[in-house]
Length: 485
Ligand code: NDP
Image (cartoon, rainbow, N blue to C red):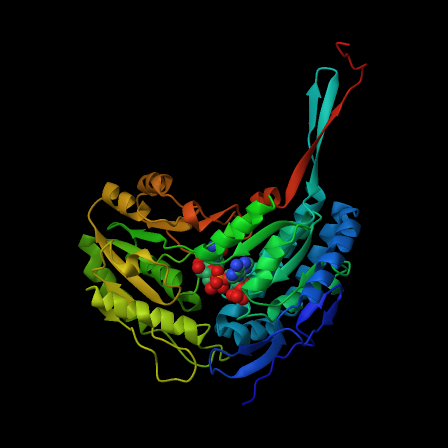
């Protein structure tokens, strides 16, 4: 079957699809077959110039509108997105290889939630009145200007929407650069925002590799950079932003602990560990890839986990009964398989999986290692694939110390029937996003982000507003100003 997902052109700038064939070609491959489904071009300096200039123009118009009007556009965009959910989900599946069973509920759907939530908040973005005993002051919440969003390849339309929705609600414009691996769905968000009534240029999409992201980060007309990506990229983008004293949000990698105490509902903990390691074939930043299981229930946990993994249905991601897709690219597959080999070389016990499958495309089996120790490479580095490492522990203090012994701090979870313990342990874990007796639920109402090297700032929730706006203070004198001379 020939699959095509060729957009009208590579970029969406100033309200239109535009092309500049002088940019290097970007082939887009369907991860389930390796087949080319589209061919785009990297943004040239001329395209970037148009994007920034139209973004600046649109931002002035947009910021002058009332919050109610801005919110109405975002909420209309949410409705359009929901109405087009199937088409957008199919596109996301072609772009990422994630099963349609997932994309139908997790990708454009969560993007629509963000547009609706921040659309609801836009009209309520007020400042405060500060009485000063006669004189008074007030604050005005102002937009930052033109913001740049740079995305990873695992949740393309969700990442674009999570960045665009709060940015636009606050009166900013955004230029978004998707990952070159998954460039297609952000263009649809741009189309949808235009259809919903956003001014041309308010949300521009430019394609390209890291160099296009770097050009945005280095452009002095850009007020803020929001990156979703790896720690090494985060370091570079943060440095470029520091040079221009720009605002940043950094959503970076993780190696999060998922702790299962012996009083936990084991089936529920296994559900959490499955979601937190194998959903999206393990390509989720917040995954709980270090599964600490209290020693007395370890073998039971491993036996039931292995039994439940028999429920994996691998196959054509477009088939809605399939629940496990390929990795996003051959490079990523090779990287993950090399971690499996390292795990075996370093003495971890391979419980299940570990192999590339015989299918075409970039499929590998869900993989579980047990008897993993803290110093092993697979317990320290982010793998970003379907590889769960199970570590044993004996008591609470020990597991907290070991869970925190990482440079990352994106997420963490505790499974236990003892709620006192749950809160006590969560209170001591160094992580920005945590769960008790569940995993990886990220509703838009809840702030999401990391501490330590996992990031700076928060997406979602009211917290995101703080990262896309700035306060102006206004002192109002009611009397004469006294001066000493
Ligand atoms: P990368 O860090 O490789 O890339 C992220 C984005 O940054 C891509 O669009 C990339 O472009 C771009 N980029 C690369 N170099 C630069 C640069 N010097 N300046 C500006 N932009 C640049 O991450 P991946 O795409 O491989 O995604 C996987 C990583 O993302 C994992 O570490 C994962 O943990 C993290 N992630 C974090 C999330 C979070 O919310 N905390 C969520 C999802 C993923 P291109 O790749 O096109 O060259």
